[in-house]
Figure 1 (cartoon, rainbow, N blue to C red):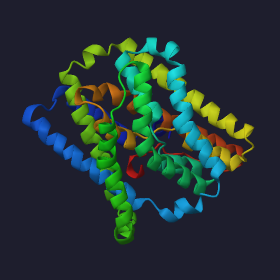
Figure 2: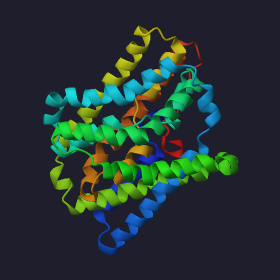
Figure 3: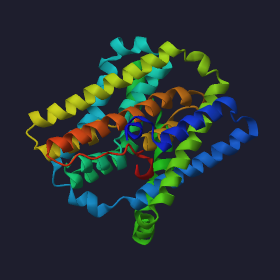
Figure 4: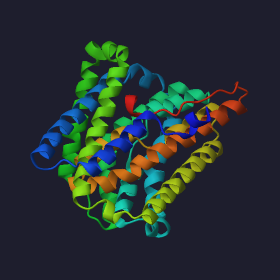
Length: 336
């Protein structure tokens, strides 16, 4: 049981293997072009399936708790970007400028869906509100993330995001998502009955993006630019951001007068960042040679948040008098 708690989940192991494969056998030339086409198709399918499986009834049922949803959105799209900017003088010396651009990108991303709901359930929080808050964050992020990324990178001195990039996000991500919502009437039941297959599509698309991203980055000399001290610095930066977000959501929820169940929802929905949404967005927003540096902070943050939130969920459950049990550290990808 101890090993189950500390070892990475299967999807994280697949990510590691994919990065190793890209490092040893990077795709190039015609092969790279084929992978680019496959990746674009997989991303469109990914967001189509997201739209098809997102229950409008569940979202509508949780909309009444508007204070909670605004708090989660404020943490996701206001607190995190401000932390990325305000902590730059302290944290940026620990990493390279390219990696810190990846940190800023991470700060703009929406919350997870699957794992936020799962941890809220384990900790006995407000599950219906978690479904609504996480789903709304994911949907709003399609529009908000590229805009905030452009603003942060302009302040960071790396140039803003063009309206062309925003248009690409709308075309490649939002349009398939809306198409999935429209098709939900006919295929929603099938999607719910075949969740493992949908999970494979989600994970497969992310692995494709990671492979193509790291292939291009390796050919540009990625690992020569990442000595061990820089990797250690990146872990510290991620840990600081996650710790501040967890503390801010917990004590902020209490200061705003939320009850225990709503506090749990705010903590698990407002402190996390989506790998499943972030990797495809990075593919659309950034040039291929920069993707490796951009998504690396997110990949590390992904695993750190899952392991940390698993511990917090157990503690919340134990404090509520719930019988202690093992909490699996699962990936968000199948449903995020």
